[in-house]
Image 1 (cartoon, rainbow, N blue to C red):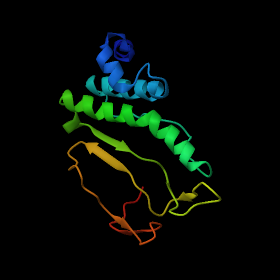
Image 2: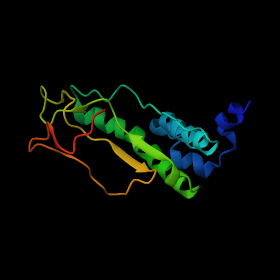
Image 3: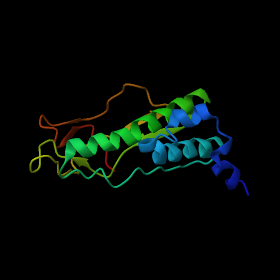
Image 4: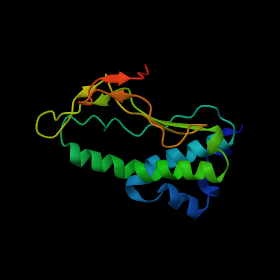
Length: 152
């Protein structure tokens, strides 16, 4: 009974939609997901997952594909954090950006990178996480986690 109004974004202001990049071409799909995530959190949903795509598997055309992907997600994810903060929801909401594996620190082929499950980055915002904190470190080549390992 409560889901239809939460999922209906027509009552959002034009300013909010623009913040998330809704109607903005490349950012529209993920922007809608991030806005719905904020609305779900606001309504009391305890776990929300947004998925961008499977297009992060860059075995080739790394520069082209990474540029495309970041253009699709940067604005919406920044909008989600900004919006949660403006609504005093960020302190109680943990935003996690991650994946199941990282990428190797060396080039694969001419313009790609292979999978790396031994050392990779995730980031978090809100939920009591101290901003600017880095935890853990890889070896000098960026391949293996060496310090303060966290298991998935």
